[in-house]
Image: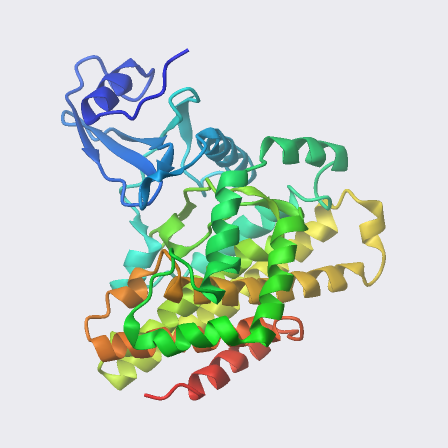
Length: 405
């Protein structure tokens, strides 16, 4: 057994040299540590004599964003690796391929996606991704359907649930999304300009009721195997390709949490646009594009999920007329509630988003933060009553109309 220790760049190179396949014996390897996340080391290994490259990702036994005072289990590395392999089986080409792993060192060697960009960065830079809604709709439909009681043997599902119990990562989500934004907490992180908004979150009992219901669902509803952190910072894209990364928060939970995470991050970018474009026509065009993407992501997921229900259902009772519509309606409502909770968390919680934080003008940045909170609260408070994505977009518009410039 190899004793765990965080790798140095030189050790990452030595490891890469031992791997079968990627590099030839005369490879001249270079290593950069490129991890900009909160929990891991990420080494980019390249051969200076060819175009070959790999990624080595190693989990740290603590949250890098806080330090060793926040310990974390290294089991998450095994979970992430197995999830990537399962997602690759269900959606080949939509996650990086795993080449090698070492569970003792809590590391995974995988495909390098340097020819893609992180979607959050691409959106901030003004790029468009016309195939994204189709791709992510397919990814979510297949990964959620085929790991649920609808699409896999129920006993096998129960066995699989045991492999993906992920208490440390779930605890982070439970605290940062469903608890701390609604009280005074050390981890909260927001600008003093929106202290009034933070105070309003702490005193809004109607909001707290909805959050309590969403929290209960997150804690208890083991519906399908989730990615668990499916935001635009965990998705690599080009104009023709979408690849999902970083499923270390994976566990069995409510499907709407994954779908809601995607919608939330698109909406967070949407509310940032007024701080990024001074030209009104350019901004209007981009805003329309983002709202269309929100609509299309849900529509693509809904269509593909229902199609799988028709062609690949394994639960005979789920064929009962009317059950599919009720199931998907509840999934949709969960999605909208979780999307709202994700938006609120990203404004007042520990980890914010570059879409808004990189707005240089302080007044515009504050305006975007207030818009995000208005939209997030509207989605949370109305999640149990919405029926269509059109209604949701109307909620977004109405919420934004209440925010003073």
